[in-house]
Length: 507
Ligand code: C2O
Ligand code: CU
Ligand code: CU
Image (cartoon, rainbow, N blue to C red; front, side, top):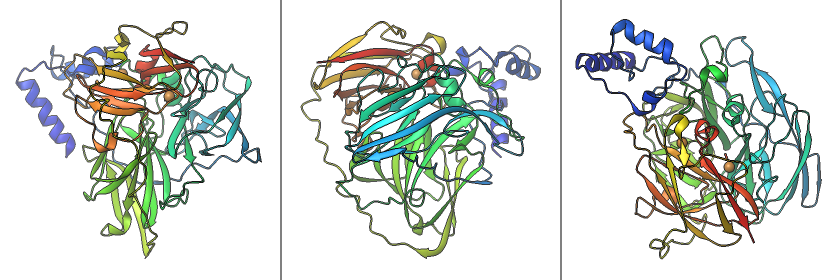
């Protein structure tokens, strides 16, 4: 059906002689130029209408999941040792092989496995030692996205290279509230490719002294889900990153969940906490349930909202996390799907209706973050402007330089940063030039968005904020530790193209 509608729309455009080009595509003449143009020219001699959506790995649609592969939560990492509050883990970064469909083996990368990585289950107050070994034949780093740690080595940004074969030890103390964080590589210029190949994992932070009445049986009613689009064909082949790469972000229309193609999730007849992570290179999603049922959002990137917020859909940009609680006992029948804004089936969910679990879930007093009044009128201490597309992306007109400190800030001091997405391009298709802005080593608060106080879902702690063209936000940023941190766009290709600056926090 969709195909016919799209074909019809494309024909209408061609008939109208419209030479509209969508913003992102217009500049992205890098890799797909040749075969795409040919395809279009066959139908239409000289007109370069690139709004045609029939490319197998274009933006736009996602292919419906056929629900063939039951997904599970990644295993939790086992500690090597645990003495009181000191816990030691090993992380081996390695090459692997993954079968996405049929018997085709695809070369992937993983932490302690073939693809993705185990969940690090960290407790507030713990002192953590990570023994990391790079078994790849290329450099990498391990960055703990959202973790409040000193800059530089502990943070695992692009200054913290681990050479092939090298073993290194990273230590930090966990000192933040309950949250869903994640870890991924950060070698400048190679981040997109290494994440594409499979390197990403979850971090759970929990405060053992502040127990909540929330679902917390890992993998049962507390399930981490990472969404990543990849160009994988029906025989299970995945394009190499160099073939899939686009300067404005790698978009594909097969959406893997927890590394599985055609995923299906099986749940019990109860309230289930889903921890959503957008681990895609560039694609942003709007998720909802196809029975139009509401759910409660309880947390964003860096922890709980003050209380659960009833919602029918959530927007999630690259690197963002949203925790939601879905009451599956309210679903009529035993199936419901997580769909995107085009109603493409991203994740079918099967519910075992045999008996209902009525455990209490209290989403009323989850946090008590202060209101931001007074800060609203404060003059920003830093102004940060994101601009451009493709290879021309920049922040404040600059591109990343390892050796240049672009900003400084005093440790422990809260500053107001004004962030603006100044991309000029019309963005009529799939919010192309949305830039998800991310800062390392801290969780910030959003004070305002476009001059207004932020939506409830932006009122929790955040480390990433998605801004569409023309949008502005004020955020309150504080670093608790010293060191050099990154601030960057989390469209990984933009980041690799230099849309990243250094901020040094010092005493
Ligand atoms: Cu997800 Cu610079 O990080
Ligand atoms: Cu980060
Ligand atoms: Cu960007």
